[in-house]
Amino acid sequence: MLFILLLAAPQYSTAQELVNDSIIHAATDSILNAIETAVPSIVVDSTSTAVSKKAPKRDWSTWRPNPKRALWLALVIPGGGQIYNRKYWKLPLVYGGFMGCIYAMTWNNSMYRDYSQAYLDLVDADPGTTSYNQFLHTGVTITTQNADRYREIFKKRKDQYRRWRDLSFFIMLGVYALSVIDAYVDAELSVFDISKDLSLKVEPTILNNRSSANPIDNSSVGLQCSLNF
Image (cartoon, rainbow, N blue to C red; front, side, top):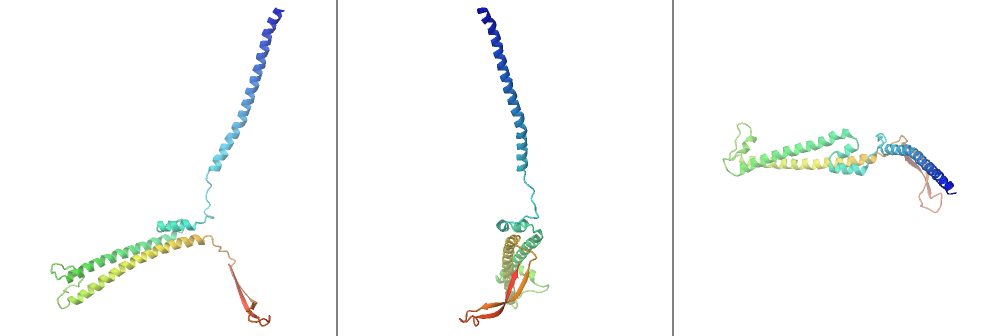
């Protein structure tokens, strides 16, 4: 009996090991199958996510500017609103206006300083200061007989160039304000309906003037105008 049990024990141990091996192989195969099934889906998901994260190309034909952004860009950078609105043909007008005003302001300020110095040299009675001679014609000199007339001329001219210098500065501010207004209005009108349905319709109508309790006396005939745009 003992011998039979000893012979059966190794067989039982071998059968148990076979069962355990089959279970391990089955579990391993199921894990490998699950990994093989999941990996392609992960790759596909990652690829689709990368494609979805790619920024779409902007369609400039349907793009419309933001009026507030155009306003702030025009305030911070002269001509920035026109660049943002993609109206590049307006840039020569804007920068040409600025450059013209700056040139006029610089030139008038230079002439004002020269005439101011000439006027001061003329009224200080110092024979060593004769900067006013550069404004005189050849052969003309200032004497006691014509000194008052030249003082008046130099005073008027320095005041004139000072006014022109100040006017050039205010015109430059006007060009700046105009560029800001243009950028904002242009951005606002970019979404304005400019369809071809623009018509004026005139037709007779009965007007109620409420002048009497009688419906006949209370009504009058007139024309009604309607504008479609």
